[in-house]
Image 1 (tube, rainbow, N blue to C red):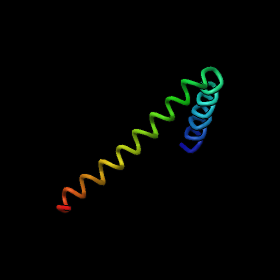
Image 2: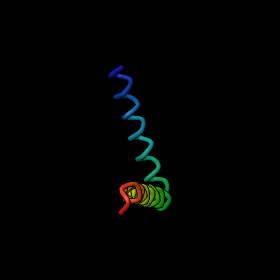
Image 3: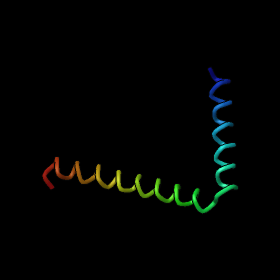
Image 4: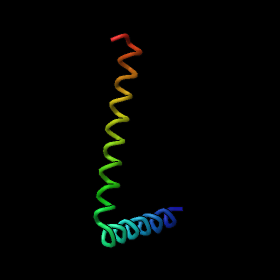
Length: 55
């Protein structure tokens, strides 16, 4: 199982490198969008707990 994880990790790294080298603008947009989504998600979780606690 450990060997499969290692192979999948290398395949993922190779694919990411390929995507970055073939279309860096699109790869940057994907990273920017992903970061924005994670930030919005964390903000919404904070709003949920604030509402839950009645703040």
